[in-house]
Amino acid sequence: MKLVDAIDRRTRGRVRIHPGLSYKTLAQLVDRGLVRRRKKPDSVAAAVYELTAKGRRYAEREGAELARLFKAGGAAT
Image 1 (cartoon, rainbow, N blue to C red):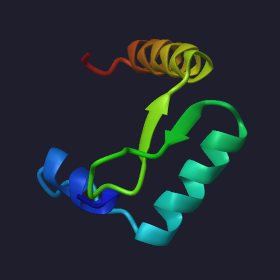
Image 2: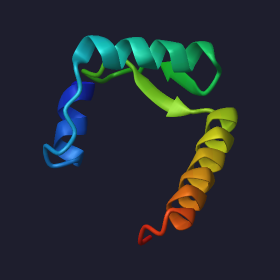
Image 3: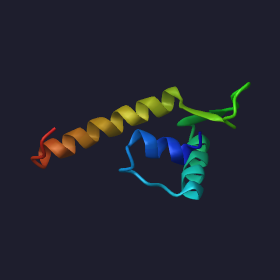
Image 4: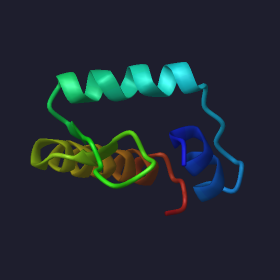
């Protein structure tokens, strides 16, 4: 399944992305060491992307910062 299709399915159509932009962004994340790309043997998928330990730490920090900002802004969490 293509990345764009998977995002569409998982978000029930609420998030729409352009294929060219998504793969460019993934390449940037790989370059920054936040995501790892690996070929998936015996599969129709060309590659699988997964968070690295560095990427997981980054995502956790960003999530905590977003939660702090929402709380400070009075948004319901």
